[in-house]
Image 1 (cartoon, rainbow, N blue to C red):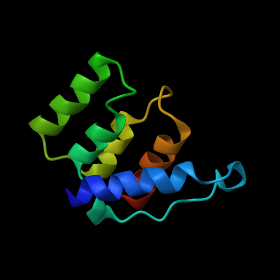
Image 2 (image 1 turned 90 degrees about the vertical axis):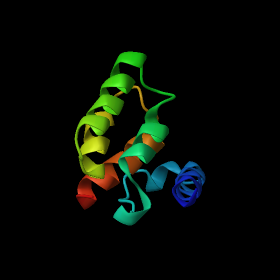
Image 3 (image 1 turned 120 degrees about the vertical axis):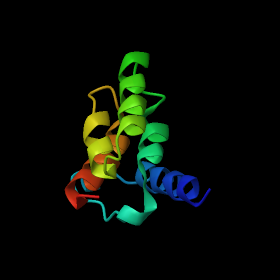
Length: 93
């Protein structure tokens, strides 16, 4: 529940950012996100095949959150979600 709240807060915060701040790096805490949070974050935007691959990868191994973010990165994602994923990748979570 805490992770869902943090995820929702992050999305709301980022959606209020103006385009001038679009390139600014986000300050993400690795403790706030897990593999399953990445699945939840990108699920509405990925086609079924990509989403199933992400879920299966998470179930078959204990990948880090940044690995999930890297695998989930896709052109079909909104910019705000790409920024969150990129920040998790950059943080090496």
